[in-house]
Image (cartoon, rainbow, N blue to C red; front, top):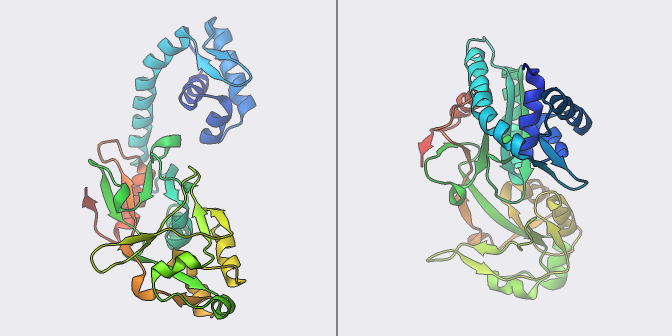
Length: 304
């Protein structure tokens, strides 16, 4: 029995994603099209591959057996097609990167436009998250991470500024009304604009000390989600709502135009810049290799 290759792709995509909506998001398709493809595959095979409810989509025993046999075959097909891709003058395909939200503002804007201009046949997809998760989730090829998030047996390629700092600031109006803290511990008496990760964890404020970094438990009337709402935190600080503590580069425009006044600068925490992070033991697809080669001009790769 022969089955259209596109139908096989749909089965694998839905099985890996655990549902039609997620598979559609990952593959750039739509749920109804994938559902129709799976239905047609089941009709042609004469067996049910998925048990469907209003909330879940799960493989049947027949579906599990088929996926176990299909996965290595589909991986080999992808590898073969990618090998052919290397003979092209210009690489093509999709490159998916999992990055922290800060990278979309502080790192990628200086890289992405020139990269896309250099490789017009590559489609770049950026998955930005406030939580640090597995970079290979959602079928991502690589990610951007900081030192503390790197794992063994990975390759870390410097990308973006090599040293960064957190900066504390407030508006002149706020400081005139509430006074200027002289030491980070004075922040416990100030209205601080805090950030919360998607996991629910509240970000701590960490400062540079004489021996080692130290943390300050701050409080305030405004809490924003880290990532999507950080611009609100900056604008609220400019309006006099409290003290903000964020990447220095993120605050730089407001510091330079005087909208925010830097405070506690001797204690600003400095840390290593981010890395492009990928598994060298996997077959590196042509779009990722092109991106690696492009980024290498900015630094030297380091094996972790």
